[in-house]
Every structure is written in structure tokens, then in C-alpha cells.
Length: 161
Image (cartoon, rainbow, N blue to C red; front, side, top):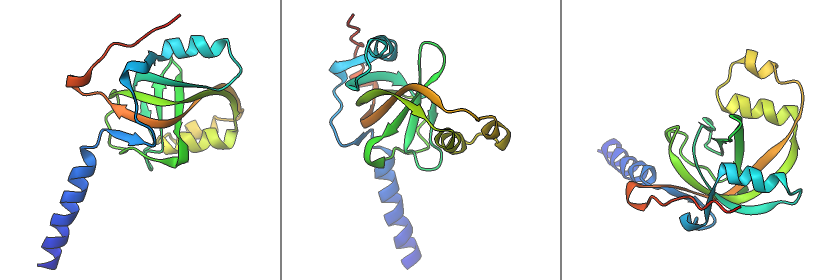
């Protein structure tokens, strides 16, 4: 009987957690979102970190803990989004899920160790991980809030130039 009770409690806890569509420390406002293409344009002209809300589909998710995601940039390369204070999203979140992510964009050199760690988290093979031999200077994003969009709440992206 205790085992059945424990299973019911776990089902309730995990059932509620899986329906959550907003994570992080800030309320993400869809109305402030810009596209990743616009983010790239704005950051190309700046060496300072800047706060943005972006709208983008997920292209990769940390499979160990859900502590980072990637979204596609216009050049086909991923934009790495690490979550501030290491909050997480469910690793089972489907690739392609449309999201709004609030955070800070900045340029930084990512070490070989970090790049290999991210590749391992993404489930890459040892062969792929071992090919990482150089640090990369790239655009990064530290998210402090993420929200899935639902069919009821879809809005257009505001592209300002």
C-alpha cells in the first residue's frame, strides 16, 4: 500500500512539473521579443552586454540536466543559452519548441573544456568531442527566464532596426 501511495504522489508531482511552461527568475514578456537575427545585428555593433528577450525554436537541450539550450542563428550555427543560477528546464522538452527567452547577450571566448562539456551534455560521440581543440570567441546568451509559447498566446516578433 505504501508503494502505491508513493507512486501516486510521484505521479502528481511529475505530472504537475511537466505541464509547467515558464522557468527562471524573471517573468518573460512576449511583447518585448525580437528575432535571433535582430539580436545578432544589434550585438554586431556592440561590445557591451545587453539585455534582450528573443523568440526562437529550441535546436538542442542539455540532456543531463536541462541547464542550457541552443537556438539557431541566421548563419546556421547555434546560439548557446546558459541559464543564470543554473536553473533548468525539462530535458524532455521537444526540439523545435518555440520559446521566448529573456537574458543578457555578450561576446566571450569559450574554452575548449567548456565546449567539450557542452558537447558531452548534448550527447555527442567521443569522436566529435575530441575534434574540439580550439577555444571559440562567440556570441553567448545568459538566460534568466524562458517561456514556451502556446497556441493561445502566439504573438509576432518585434524587429526594430
